Length: 162
Image 1: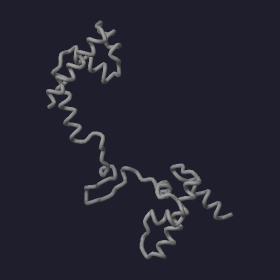
Image 2 (image 1 turned 180 degrees about the vertical axis):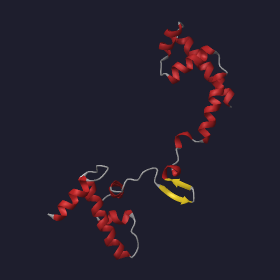
Image 3 (image 1 turned 90 degrees about the vertical axis):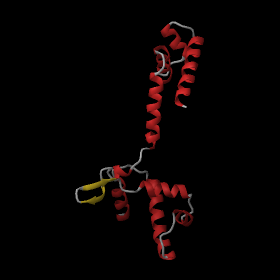
Image 4 (image 1 turned 45 degrees about the horizontal axis):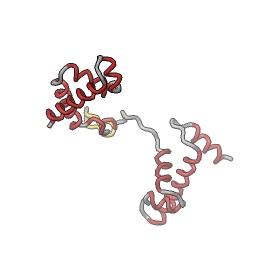
């Protein structure tokens, strides 16, 4: 009964809600880790732990990750006098790297060189998600003309970018 109450307390007083089955898997993995640590006299791998408790390696890794304590992105990792490095400083944003930044500048410059009508068509098509027919209705020309103008504008931009 006491062990049950301790588990309930740990389960209910955490900042992130983790399912009971996931927690149970994680605790089984931790017990297996301790057993293997004494048996092997080294820190066992996740694969070895998974084999010991007869579970999939991915499931064990997910369960162990789920019970990790949450940490603030502003938690200091390193401090040297007045210079502090936070976890946030160690995270890389792959979505907008230096190459992407340069591509965006080149793209912006290529778009600036287009005629206003071509710029408008590309803006409506690619940034506003409009169809060629919708753009054609807006500016009073046929869908085929919009298609031709769009194709020529993209071709011109491509030649400027190369």
